[in-house]
Amino acid sequence: MITQGKFRMIANKFKILLILFCCLLLVSCNNRDYKSIECPYKLKQLYMCTAKSAWGLSFENEILFTENGLEDFKPVKILENVNSFTDGYAKAAFINEQLAYVTYFSSDNEHLIVEYTRDGGNNWNQTLIKYGDYSENCDAGSIFISFANDKEGYLLYCSTPALGQMTKLLFFTDDGGQTFSLTEELTNTISGYPQGITVIDNETINIAVTYHGTDSYLYQTTDGAETWETIEIFPRTEDVKYVDGYIPVFYSEKQIYIIDGSGNLFEKIL
Image 1: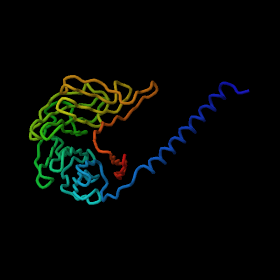
Image 2: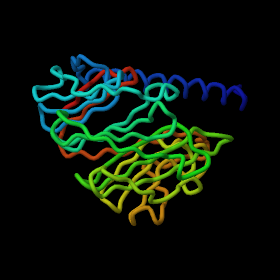
Image 3: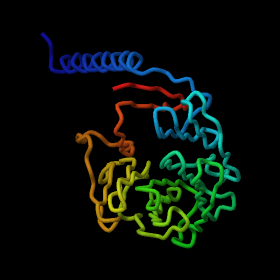
Image 4: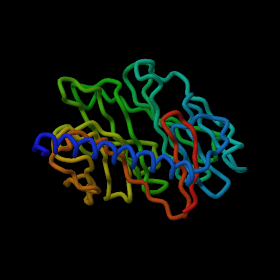
């Protein structure tokens, strides 16, 4: 006779075997569906302009560009004087073949640096933001940048967490990055630690965060950051305590490029 306890034990073992089977099936499908791309650089970010031209940000904080396929990436800029306490943290926003932005913390522990090019990386302009002027609890934490078009974009500054609290400041530019103004302090509006920002237009913004049992993993505004609501892409069950939310990416072509945790590049044709 099978007791209730034994039945639960057998059921749990069956669940574990089912999970392992699904993982093996997923790995098998991934290996079959995705093709490894020979890229000379380990990538943190990738933006395809056309089937052959693309921008990239490497692990070594090199801004890369190619007109002849991903195998032919060449550096057009190497970031210098990046804050050492951030382990070389940098984020980029690539708009088209000519226009690109990159942001990082300066080595003086006082400024955000936004650099941008309008001629495919030949010349670069620089904008400084002294983040300590906007809040008492500010240090070199993380930054995210996204643009709706060639003029309007948002920059999200985050301090390092202290006692579970993280300063979050949202800046806006309407002149292509020449100046940034503080739009909203989101410290008490958005819970969790931000993972990224996607700007759809100058009014619609998505911010993804790590979910620690409070609110949500994705926040959205449709009125230029005046009000925010939580969004559910995938419903959470009651037993889910942690979620790493990642920003939605919108792309019209039937082709997907995947960057793994080691910076390797994979391609899938839909």
